[in-house]
Image (tube, rainbow, N blue to C red; front, side):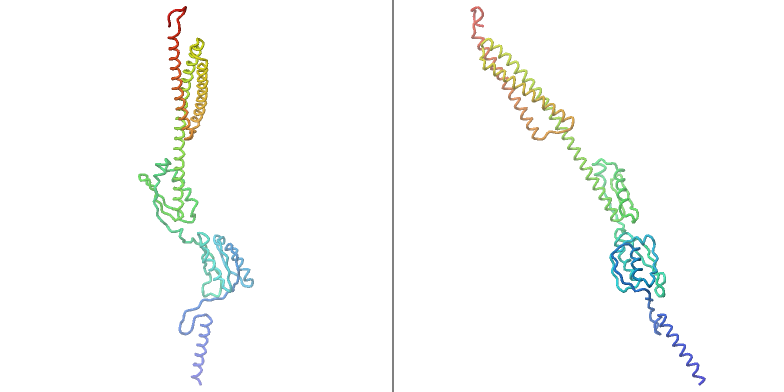
Length: 354
């Protein structure tokens, strides 16, 4: 009987140790891995979307009898949480659910830290906002040419680089600052940065190139307009000079016809024809002077005539020249008539013909 007492005591001690192992989750006598503690509130909620702060308030409303022990940094509370629907989950699962989707809503993501440990009987967590390593955080390299801007476009290098710097200040604020190097001799701009940063630089350069090309086109158009306006002014001035000469010739022809008419050497209709030619020449002169005034105003304002106007002016100029030639022929005919009649007319006091 004395030998049975120590054996019974050892058996009781072993049973007590086995029960303690099972209570603390240390596994069986085979030494299996421990199981994490899963005590805490069981949560069911439907969250319409909002900030992390609003999500934590919804968790606390879903567990009125069990406290929700969560500490969150200020920059974590403002992160966006999408619409979430959960049923019968632990607090850690509810927090990990929004951490898995937070990176989709900005450049920072949510990290959940278990403050009590996985095998503790407590349930306390911390939410930390950390920079999200997304595609925008990947560094890349690019080389762009600025020659079209600085040489063909006539833009200063400082102006281009200032515009690029302004554009970089508006994109990817959480990414590291890009590195830019400009090689003056080759006109190349070398950059290292995130894809959004490189895209912003390329868009800025392309926009500046489009702007300089449009300015060049406007300059060329203005120069062409000025040249055409000057040509119009020169043509109209020539037309005025031709018209004035035409008036002078018509005036002389009319005067000569009037004198001959008084002596009876030409008919009245020929005199009227000369007067009509003079009136027409005067009208053409007034028209040419009006065109010259309009051309001068256009030249002063850099307004070019249309191709149709230029063709019309050329045709008018040719018509005036043809009329001038016709007047000259008329004058020659009048002179020839006068000479013929003068030779056949008797001289004064019955003398011989002149």
